[in-house]
Image (cartoon, rainbow, N blue to C red):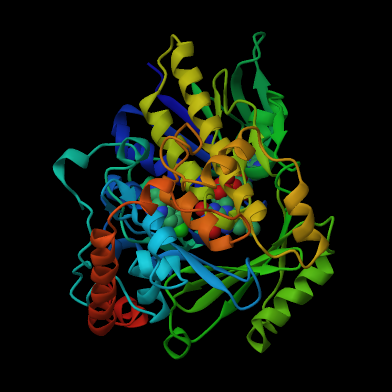
Length: 516
Ligand SMILES: Cc1cc2nc3c(=O)[nH]c(=O)nc-3n(C[C@H](O)[C@H](O)[C@H](O)COP(=O)(O)OP(=O)(O)OC[C@H]3O[C@@H](n4cnc5c(N)ncnc54)[C@H](O)[C@@H]3O)c2cc1C
Ligand SMILES: N[C@H](Cc1c[nH]c2cc(Cl)ccc12)C(=O)O
C-alpha cells in the first residue's frame, strides 16, 4: 500500500489535492502538506471551467457553503472584446450546442444566419450576460437547459468520462486565496497534517527516488508518494529530479502578467456574469467580477512591451478606481514538464504545466490531474502502466489546450500592431494548420479537433473560429442543398427563449447577495 502522501506547496494545487484525496480515501491515507510561510502563492482572481462543480460535489460542498466565503460569482462565458476589430465582441458560452438534422446549429448559421451575430443567434447565454442576469432564480431554480444535473448515471465519472454527455450552463469566478483558506480548514478538519515551513532540500536514494524532504524547522518529512505543488519553482520534480520542462513559448509568446485587485461597489456597478478578455496592443486584459471587487490583469509578451508600459496600460484601462491598488507583476513559465509523474513524485499545478489564462484552464488542469491520479493511484509495485497512463493524459490535455489557445491568435482578424501581425506567421503546433484547412469548409467536430481529451468540446473551437473572424469559413456544401426550415424554427425558438429569460431572471448581483 502507498498510504503516506507528502504534498509540498499550499496554493490552489496543494489544497485542492489534499482535500480531494481526503474525500476520496479518508483515513486510509495519511497526508502531510508543507507550505512555505513566506513564499507567496500565484492565485489572483480566478475563473474556472463549469466542470469544477464536480470537484465541489465530490467534497460534499454546496454553492451556499463555499461561494460566499470566496466572494464567488457565476461565469456564463468568456467575452472576447476587440479580437476582430475595435468595438467588436463575441461570447464563448457554457451552453449545449443545438443540433439540427445532424449538423450543429453554427453550421446552419453559416448557411442561413438570421443576423451577423453567431453567438446571439445560436445561444441564449450571450443575451442573459449582456443583461447582467443570474442563470438561477432567487429560489435557486436553474434555467431550463438541455443538460442533466446530478443524474445517478453521472455520479463518480471523471471530467473526461462526462464530456459530450452534458453541458452545464455556468462556471465560477472566485478569490483563489480565499478558496485555498477554505480548503485548508476542510482538509485539516479531516486529518491533513499542515506544516508551515520551507523545504530546503530533497533526499534521494541510489535509484534517484525521493526518501524525504528536509525542512528548516520541522526536520525531515518522509512519505511514500510526494506531490510537488511548489508552483513555477518545481522544487521536487524539476529541481531535485531534474525532469525537463518543455516550453510552449515558440507558439504562445505571452510570458508575463501584471494584476490588480480593484475594490468596487458591485451593487452599483452591477455584475456582468462572464470573464472578459479585451485584446490589447501586445496581449489582452482580463476582467473578473467578484463580490466586492474586480480582478484584472494584463497578460503580455515582454518581447513586445515592458512591464512598466503594461502596468500603465492596465491602470488606464481600469481608470481611477485602480489608483490605490498595488500591482502584482508575475513572470509565467509557459509549457509543461516532460513527464508530470517521475519515480515517486507527481507534479500538480504550475509545476506540471501552465498556459496563459485566456480560457481559464489552470484550475481545470489541476482538477483533471487529481482525478487522473486518484484513478491511477499506485501501490508499492509502482506499476508503470498507471504512471504512463497518467503522464499521457496530462501531456494530452495541455498540448490540446495549447492548440486551442493558438487558434485564438491565428484566428484573430486584428493585425494593427507587430504583436498581432506576428501571430499570423508564427510556428503553429504540429497538426493545427491541417485542422484549420479542414474547418474552412466544415466547422470543427469531434473528428477534426485535437484527437485526445483536452476539456474543450468541438463547439468551443467553432466559437473561436467564428468569433475571431480572421479565417474565412464556408458553410458545409451539404447544407446549401438541404431544407433549412427546421434550422429556422430552432433560431426562432432561441429568440423566444432569450426574450423570456431576459424578462424573468434576476440580476446576478441580487442572486449572490442573498446566497448564504
Ligand atoms: C496571471 C495568472 C492568471 C491566472 N488566472 C487563472 C484563471 O483565471 N483560472 C485558472 O484556472 N487558473 C488561472 N491561473 C493559474 C492558477 O493561478 C494556478 O493554476 C493555481 O494558482 C495553482 O498554482 P499552484 O498551487 O500550482 O502554485 P502557487 O500558487 O505558486 O503555490 C505554490 C506553493 O508552493 C509553496 N512553495 C514553493 N516553494 C516551496 C518550498 N521550497 N517549500 C515549501 N513550500 C514551497 C509556496 O509557498 C506556495 O504555497 C492563473 C495564473 C497566472 C500566472
Ligand atoms: N468541459 C467543459 C468545457 C467547456 C465547454 N464550454 C466552455 C466554455 C468556456 Cl468559456 C470554457 C470551457 C468550456 C466545461 O467545463 O463546461
